[in-house]
Image 1 (tube, rainbow, N blue to C red):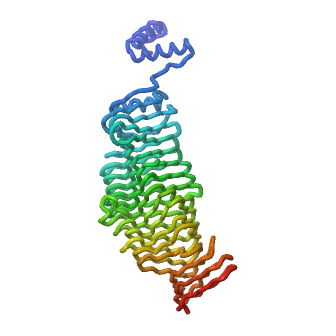
Image 2: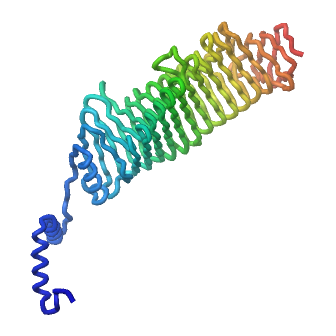
Image 3: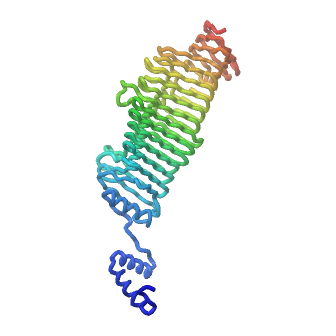
Length: 480
């Protein structure tokens, strides 16, 4: 039996109440509860708070996710704020607005440490720097590891003439992973940097996730020596580049984009380099690869994509399915000043402004087509001043008009090893030389339009003429 005997319960209650009311925090809670009971209105806490350091940030976020208030947190700290405690947002606060403001606000998930962050629907993270770049770092620094899972919500970088958001993941020997299956990440005018300076970064964009670089955004995927950057786009996700993209930038770097989602869309605006060295074009570049398995890849307006941009760099385009289109004056280079390769085994590709192979002296460009349909709807397939090879071993090459395949002073091989050339739009007139590869039968489908071939046909492979219309072979051919 305690001191509170049956006969002394009233006295004991009075003593305990006296002790409770001496605690100001407990007294405050009691008064708030009494007020709520009397008015029928729940107590209201602050909806917006301003925080200036890590401890204030941690306290405000913890209050938001557990109690629902505050739901707007303005971060004005001048030092790095980290989320290294496995935060899951928004918790009870929906919406939860995290606004990073000030001269150069910075936010880290595994920045010189290990951290994770989950962003769900109702979470809005905004960066608005006032004088220089805002920083969002994931897996930054030697031995660091950071991961972000985004299923909804928004991340927005607001930019001006002198400010922008710099997103860096897997940088300076760090490792970062970003899994986005929903929501929108907008970096209008910002920098999207994945796998930089001996770091490794992987960005998985799936579901209905959206990444939008805006008109002036820049992409660095696999940047500087040892940088390995990977972007995977699947499901019905959408990725839109900005003014420029560098995939495999700098000697020893590797950048890879893989698109494999029937409803996915990737839009390349501006200048896009796969295998380059933007900081020192006279030095060897890295390796940049695009794998198109399914979905739609668009190279728009005045944009271009250069695979093998500088000497010592390698750019590879692998297409096993999906749809590739160019519009406006968009142009694709397979080997600009470096080594370029286009391997097509399926899908469709339409080039409205032409396709350049081995453009400059010293470059190499190889097209290996074993399937799919490649359509030249405008411009030319141009074998440039370097060393060009087109192996048409399967699939269909659709061309028409006068001189759709042109040569510009370099060496070239046009090898017919089992594929089909189909005439489209108007009668084909070409002077390109071609080799019929041994043990194969290739076809020319005149498609009711006709074709005149004045280039030399050599080799000991077979050639079949199909379709309505006339095929005229006018050169001193040497094929047997």
